[in-house]
Length: 460
Image 1 (cartoon, one colour):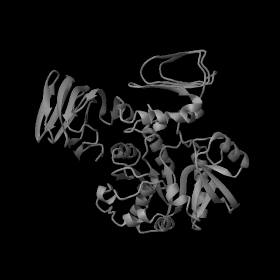
Image 2 (cartoon, one colour):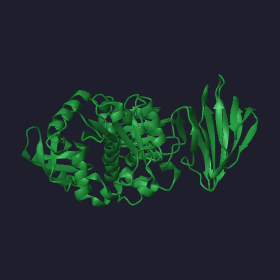
Image 3 (spheres, helix red, strand yellow):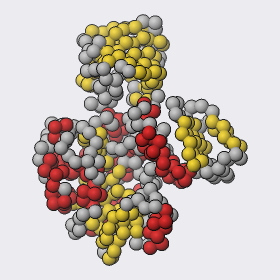
Image 4 (tube, rainbow, N blue to C red):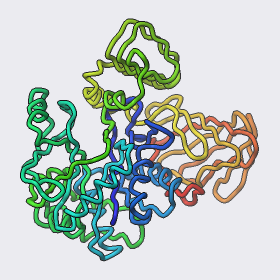
């Protein structure tokens, strides 16, 4: 069996904790591992690491690869040059396995941002689904609805199969009254976006039902690396797997997911899975309450004091505060869309990296100022930038710097300029933390303006 993890997405409904450059699948929302890492471990319990492929956007590639390498370095990550929704991502992943193994294996396809606690029950469902996949079905994993949810798509089932059902139709996210009728009907399931089939069956359906995607697969070449070239991808249509294949195919079957499941797609869904106090509250961080009930309050840094409120969501991060009624948590995406052009949707002020962390202090047209902390015995990659120069001022500790094949040691109070396109590395081989101020200046200021030549953490 092969596995495909869909590791893109923005997690906009969990703003401001989830950001465009660090979406919810990379966050640890329940435990010590991220949702992505938990997903990989779940698949790895039945599939070898080298047979699990994660596909993500190029801007998330370093973080996805880094997190998965912490579990098993044999994992495979494919980078899309631009987001084209789930159908092209899945088709490219299938093509990768076809080119690499030339075998007609069963493939299990899962999102990277679902919370599943009962792995054993999940595996039982996978084994049952394989019986239908072996017969040529595309098997979707349906979740029996427990309440009239309006934030999920639904699937209606028809005749029984030996361990599942034929699918009659897929339906869009309903309004509340329609969701209540689906719940009462008993033949509707939530669409969890998990499915399984033979690689050959899926590719045949792409050829028949989505020929504009299938026609572009012949241009993909994975022999050298796992980064898809832009020129091979720009002609792909942007379309979901549901619209491209699942809603059109006559080969769809559904099997009921036996395990727990939550897609953590909103603050309400996160509230649902968290342990609550005697007043029904989920309180995280420095939070003080008085007469507060059935609420989710999260403080990342500052003290948050709340009195006399019920059924609210309140989230504080370093650079943003978001508040809404619990039953309106799906509407956080509307806030996210309004804020899309601001940095508050793209990055947290403080971003953690394997070598330490950085905090964005100020930014404007053509410049960005950061404080950077490099932990003892750690170092940043040897890299260059096409669009920006940098100026470093050492605040604490001592910096070992490589700049165009020359070595420099800069102590506290000293500074150094990093010219445009210069090959450089900031390193801390010493026993104390290194802290610097970095001023970036250029025509394009972004974290994706990095060309890495060597990196001890395996990033590219």
